[in-house]
Image 1 (cartoon, each protein chain N blue to C red):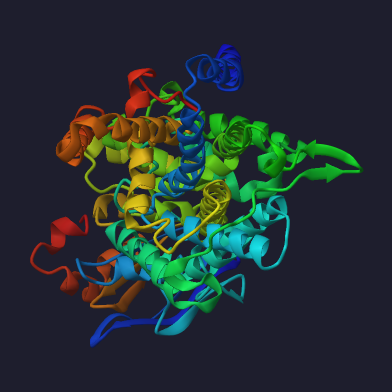
Image 2: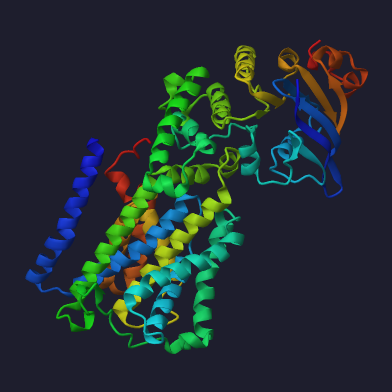
Length: 325
Length: 259
């Protein structure tokens, strides 16, 4: 029980820091640009959580950028062309990504190891080219001037105000993104610590044995991949709402690779690994900006060093080993 | 004893090579039937065909008269035909106990969604599985090492864990792939007792094995394969005297068939 208590207090601490301390620090220092950075971290870590889930069933997924791009476009088109509320377009974008990922996953999830990774890598490029070619996406000019999210009203009560009327929309986006992130990771945590998590783990470790004890491995792989793509879709859709624009290059192969690196860096054995990984990678990259031409060089070398020194991720520093059952 | 599993003119071709050629036999309820044969005789292929990890080119496998060949492996497992693996195939990153608990998956009454939400039947499943896993581990003498990480076990225990995983699925018929391979005399003796004890639990056993003395000791009946064809079938003493079997094993005949 004590581990449950310590996890709950860690969550409480995180909520206090994210919702009270960070806004206060930003107000004091006047660095309201940090809201944008932190919002990005929250949203990118949602998409990375999806990649983490595919790692969890033993698949290296370098294609999350495709679903982030698709989710972004679906939301952008629904809002600008369909006049749909952004808050409705968000789950719709996720569901459409999940649906498409089932069709794509059926054939490609039979592949393992580097073969699966290669196909997913190509997916991102396919998504970019499709966005360039399809008339609905407006080609290379992209979709711009997307209106900010409208209000959420339920039974006449305004749950969330219209973002266009807010004095500080950056802060509002930050709160929404962090809330969404907490919900997503709570959901994934529950998944991993239920029997489904054990089944996924059995899949990760030996698919043949898993199917010989009666696990429907094809179904489980599809479910995990669909959830993964759902998270990519809502992450992308949220991002587009903040940027108020989307282009075919909004999510590219680099982003897909970064989603994967976030998971590696944070730690594949920890549900919150993607959050830590995204945070460190995103801030690390920004921090190295002042080194100018050496930015990429130093960044890559630090990454390599980190992976050699901490193959199980940054979080392995704090917990000696993943707890048993 | 009633016929449980029937293999009917089963054939598997890989290109021009016929690995299994028109093999027919049946397994009776509650017996221990061994399939033996020199290297390359098609034993492993036959096993994969029965457990439906491979589709036959011809012929079929029937469980209590119903065709199971061509179905997905997890469906066949659900029907009660469960295989263990030749190598020490286990879930390496889990504890011994978790290995056995997860293998109870077939028995779960709750749906995946039920497990996610922690429904009443899911919680009942969890406690049932844990109890049954402990019982199986004690039965196989693994109780003391239940919390160890599976990858740290010595070979003898790994083999027992493989059988524990098979048992946890509550099989009607358990297919054991070379359960005695690489074991010394003492380990083999213990493993033979173990397999007998499993049969006493009401599980029919079909095993593929190289270790002739062990096979002669443990089997009710034996099927002998050579070059993908069945060359003999009978009780251990019948097999030992069969001239075709002796011929197939010629060279080291006396020693290798345990006479």
